[in-house]
Image 1: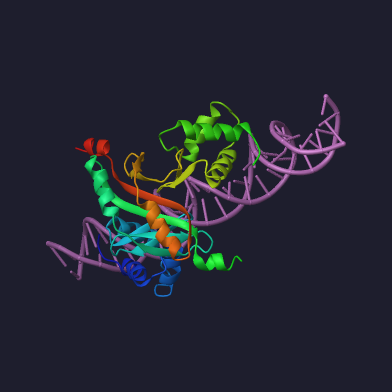
Image 2: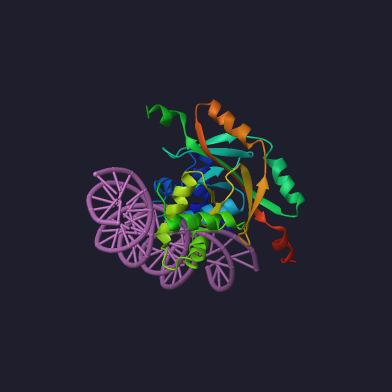
Length: 125
Length: 125
DNA sequence: TATAATAATAGTGATAGTTACTATTTTCGA
DNA sequence: TCGAAAATAGTAACTATCACTATTATTATA
């Protein structure tokens, strides 16, 4: 994997965001810096970066979301507003180990909780 | 939700399968019994059945998969052959409880491991 | 049982997220 | 500096899923 300012930008946007942006979010943000960046380039780089482990792909109901890779954590996604929250957790590594004991090779772990977040529940009343 | 033989069939197919079939898998299987069942009907019933908790929807990389057991367990998906394995686990409910303590309302929990399964790793050598 | 209201269907078309393709441009080593 | 390799922009294609509509099946009721 060589260098391109587009890939650096995509990585920087994911790294600086706490909102778990979608590919389209990242595309729109990237266009502020490189106006003619193409959506395909954003998708390709998101795939490359998540394959190499530099960012994390979160498979949510409608389209994927992306996260900077910090330590192992889970996500909570509100089915109403679509926001994704981080959930610190431990014990997941132990579970993955158990699968590896069976001869499988775990490359990626996704723990996702979905429901209605506090503020959406409030605005429902 | 009333009755329809199409919905019964979709439910029966999911209930009798251990392979975590996709919507298309279920559609193809259903056509053996009801040749003119439509793909839209399969999708609609899969949505209805998973909403009512009669079956479980598993969001995998490419398209969703469905499972008969709705009791809490995780999945391991092989990125090579696409097969989905069940992973029994406990402690997930405790995690969901912790999120609820923050005022959120957890409706669905997805714990997905991805990697290369034993037999795919073997056939790689 | 007959019938009217309701729900579900088949078939088709539309949508959205994502990937593939190609000609052009950029990167980077020699 | 030059040329091979990689990356890009732009567009088109693909796939999973959902929406729409006329028709058919189910169900409640008289």
